[in-house]
Length: 219
Image (cartoon, rainbow, N blue to C red):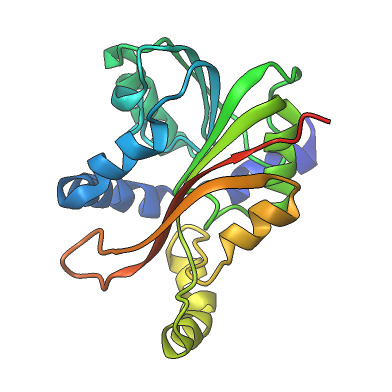
């Protein structure tokens, strides 16, 4: 057995957080998350790879023009929920185990790659985005929906301060990441981006979020 692969798999398991996230995601969708997911996926066509698919909350919202969705999820608890969600989706969805740093995909034939509320918690954004680029065809789209560091000085400093603790209790989540900058640094061209505040739960403050589209260069 590959001990490094086993260690990586174990590090990506957060069963206690995953069980809480299943409940939080339902609340978030009721408070506007469904509309965000629809905006994220609107206009997609062809083959799509979703990285860190969670429990499959995006599956019902893929447009009819999407011919196939391959959904990668490392956490066992969330992946089990995603497998159940896939059976109810109108799109053809295949759920597989894997992690963003080494996607179990060998070709570059995807028309789009989707990151949805996952780039906050990946061990390294650069590695995850590089893998997304690797499996994406030239000129293909990167769709992203993420919470990000506050643009306001006090809010940003507060997020910096709580990140070490929040990362431990929140399944690796970093509330202070500049995801827009990471996407640009990975070589993508951002074509459209919307910044907005959103509180996924009545017990949580509004935090900065982004939804957008980027493209992989054709050359």
